[in-house]
Image 1 (cartoon, protein in one colour):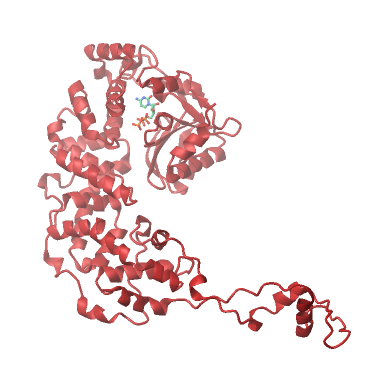
Image 2 (image 1 turned 30 degrees about the horizontal axis):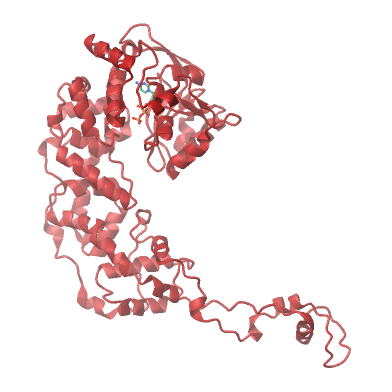
Length: 551
Ligand code: CTP
């Protein structure tokens, strides 16, 4: 049997793993069984990136809200009807925690009757076989995969199959979802599912779609890796007008969207993981009117996403303003400002900034300035014992980087001159090797260490003082061994040092400090100020679009 817990742990990001542990703790504390379900299990088996975590609990998920919030989660929506929570967990991990429930449809277009249920019953209410699996996270059955509809086989066969013949009639949003999954995975609908889908289209089942499902599907678009291709497929299938009658692919800023995804990729490669969803919605609706945008926003259940979308332009504009002010007068200050800004804002501004100076600074931040890191003389720093083991290593490395960035350290010699006074004193040499035998005993006796043992005769060779004690109590003062400096600190690989220094790493965000005052400031610094000419006057607007104001 496959070890699904192992697969899960290797496939989840560290933040997602923490999120699973956090939800598990909350469920345990409330005495509820917890299962990971839906897309996470599908993606875990297929190898596609796990985008979000869907949990089912046996019990009222709303009861976990307080615990989860205390642990740093943001609740985007709490639905009393389904007793589910839409969450953003620490590290930006999206999750849904829902009560395991059964659904019974009396009439198309009417909300199903819901009741608390077992996990197996919960799987029966789901859309496609590949999404109807659950992994137990509970003691005793941890790692057990529940797959009552043989979803794993359909994953293997790469097909999308509904669970029963009434699937599209009961929940017409499944037709939209079918289009989304077939487009994303390039998996076809299984033959009978395809026939049901066609029939659903012909018979206009979609008119029975529930408004809550419309909002949910609009939201899901924001998290697609290639939202434009999904939008095109929706348009082709007639679903886009269901989401909003005035939405079309012509309303999309395709250039902006593709730049967004490209820049996101570059940022990912540098270790940043911005949440692009708000910006995706911005570009997908770029040419829509305010009223339609308002309608879309009201429909989306996840309120933190809507707020982030609304604030996007204003926040980017204020960052642009700061980037043209005193706060960003030098490369090092600009670096610090951009390092501490939210990556989402930097990303959005990178694409929408109209002010050349702002665009250039962001470009430098992602490219040219990062190369300056190569100039940090890591091997020499190791020789000076400035290594990650010392407490102020990160600060020293960061200060050197910032000075290099501003051209205040222009050569290796200058950099070393700056670093030398910061070199910590050499550590004491190691204790001498333990002496054994008579010599040690004699030495110990001579030093008066150990139990007072009568010495038979002066100069007698026999001594009973314990050698170890002698070494322990009389350490290095008597030793004259000098350990060559270079060999004192083991030198970690330079690359590792750079990482340890945190220079330019996203993890350094917010912690970048002003260059500390060196013991002796580098002389040439005064002469070689590289501050850009007062950019404070230049006006910056991220893509001035009057119509977008107040969205
Ligand atoms: N689901 C369903 N019917 C719907 C919506 C959701 O059965 N109309 C169930 C499915 O089991 C689905 C899970 O809820 O897998 C989570 O929904 P969602 O997050 O929308 O889809 P995922 O399958 O997780 O896919 P992804 O997040 O990758 O888009």
